[in-house]
Image (tube, rainbow, N blue to C red; front, top):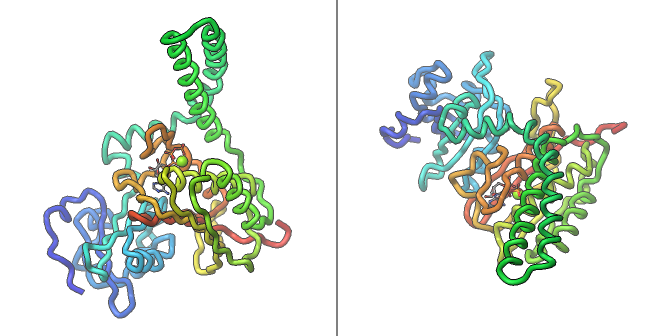
Length: 358
Ligand SMILES: Nc1ncnc2c1ncn2[C@@H]1O[C@H](COP(=O)(O)OP(=O)(O)OP(=O)(O)O)[C@@H](O)[C@H]1O
Ligand SMILES: [Mg+2]
């Protein structure tokens, strides 16, 4: 495993980056950049060649994520992961894994610490502000909707006596105000999310409900198939909120392929993933749902931010769908990851199983 010559880009990268390779089946550090040395207060010499797990504790099954990245030859993005070094917590990072060119053995691992994310550029600052403004937007949304209803009503009344160009103008007022109302509804819905009321839920029932409404509505142009593991135990979840999650994911998959395509819904059991829950206890997340589409993939320039509010790659997109999805999944102590390349995008949700008495 020889790392490629480390060039100036590598040295100048503002975020910690590691090159990871397999040495006798163990994920090992082939190299790290100066930002990583500084971030973890480690010298490059002292970490080169060491097992990744010896150096860093990463709050997800990073080996699995690395293997998936290699196997599928597709980048993997993981949001809000706890990364620590020995007993020194380094904090929350988003982790991005990508194969280095055509080399199957080396994976580039970028860690974007939450604090750095805020400093990287103006856009991030704006998004941070957007997040804190959400509470206020919610109040405003509520207040603005009343006068908007008045405006729509007045424009509709006016339009009755009009024709031709004038009528087109009042129609425009009505259409645009309705668009604003829709946007405000989404902002309100995002802010109003109540904590989940969790019970034992059959995940396939929820998926089938989502699938049916997708098939008769926004995804009528898509072919949806499933591959369910019928022996899955119930999950601990709020079924209405889960329905919102799946509807949002299916909708996104349908919207990126307006001329039709395929969506596959897959469920399976794998017991090795566990995460630190809100209570500080480790929670096992053995039940996995994947929504897979064969669309164009997530635009690269927004790939690591799609779970932030108001990040959208679509014209007329609000960018609140995935922010809501990630908020709901986090409130369930669950986990969401995405893997995307042209022709294949996989959103994977991992959830805890219901305990006795749920
Ligand atoms: N399956 C997918 N394939 C490709 N790109 C996707 C997929 N899902 C999401 N995206 C990208 O992520 C962006 C953010 O998605 P999100 O659902 O948060 O917002 P939106 O769909 O743009 O707006 P909203 O859901 O609020 O109506 C999308 O605009 C799209 O560019
Ligand atoms: Mg959406």
